[in-house]
Amino acid sequence: MPKLSNKERMKIQRQAMPEQDSAIRRNNFSEVNLGFTEELAKMEAMRCIQCPKPTCVEGCPVGVKIKDFISLVAEGEYLKAAEKIKEDNMLPAICGRVCPQEEQCEAKCVVGKKGESVAIGRLERFVADFERQNVGIREAVIKPKSGKKVAIIGSGPAGLGCAGDLIQMGHDVTVFEALHDLGGVLIYGIPEFRLPKDIVKAEVESLKKLGVDFQTNAVIGFTDTVDELLTDGYNAVFIAVGAGLPYFLNIKGENFNGVYSANEFLTRVNLMKAYKFPDYDTPVFHIKDKNVAVFGGGNTAMDAVRTAKRLGAKNAYIIYRRSDAEMPARKEEVHHAKDEGIEFIFLANPLEFIGDSEGWLTSVKLQKMELGEPDSSGRRKPIPIQGSEYSLDIDMSVIAIGNGSNPIIQKTTPDLQYTKWGNIVVDDNTMKTTKQGVFAGGDIVTGGATVILAMGAGRKAAAAINEFLNSSN
Image (cartoon, rainbow, N blue to C red):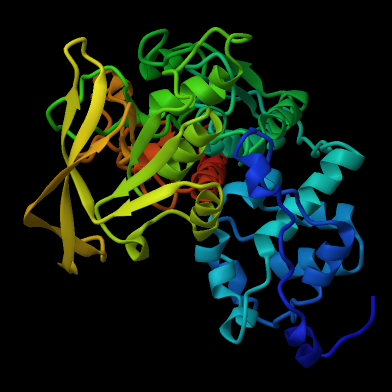
């Protein structure tokens, strides 16, 4: 590669991500972003000015050595770059696709102060894909067996991150998953067109090869309790069950046929493959040529409405009570949604669902809103405009306004400390709970957050669990 000055590097434009044409992709579930070629990856890597003090690392929840792996990409050393990333991040192919880098590492990029930041996430994805496609996911080195056993509840990003570190430390690890497939929210929540499930399965298989034991259809709290795990030979327990209890609007008519929570809708489509009905026998509402409204403005709302469009919706709406400036969804997801023909209705709040005599949804009553002063979230508070009510004809709705904590663990482990929202209270540095030998992390602690934050919590817990196990010899 040619030697370039920082001034020359700064002149290189950020490389565009190749993607499926919007007119084609709105009719399929194949991945939208196609990934960098080697040429694009090297060119993008050359934009990195190799800061002496790389502030981008400050924005990474797991502290990936960003400038080091990017330097290796620029040199064409892609496998070494993969090794460098996986010193800190065991799930780079996943994080490179779904993490909000624009709010994390890329937001801290020095290059971004005078132009567009280096596409760190896209380079991470390229490196991970190159390794998987050319040599497979390479196994890590395992330390001698410690004789200690750890139970991990949940196979989402927090659970997988914790399992990957603990198995390498020499401990026996069993991951208990409530569903019949592994990956948690990575499998049931994120659509195929954003995160292909083969990638998640490959990461899980790599952990199996290291010796992690996965048990599916195991609802801890019913099949076993946390206390029973501790008395059945496990020396420590890590709770990583996520936040999978859906919130609803609590308005009249929410029980009409055709009203879904985002959890149910996306689980049916992603995990149970409703988009392949009748080859798979878990259908969703017959969407083709119907009007579908999704309520919410986050990534889950974008996933749901874009899924509805792919299932054949005539009109697919996002209905959000604030303006587009306040939407928490990633800009890339909003951009993709607009390209795919999603209609956005801003400053509108649902008041009531209307249905027919047979109990089927036919419309929603909305009220126009205006923005006032910022609320506790920092976003401008929506205020109703009196006398502005109107109706919108819809056949199906999806509620995507957030999730709470599943109460099963709380009901069966009352001696843990919980917040008023049902989240488990932990020490932020060690992820220790108030119960001896029990740790927790991910969305069950923070509420709904990002994949990389959950994985970071899992890795932090693994370090603390390892110290706990070594000190209890």
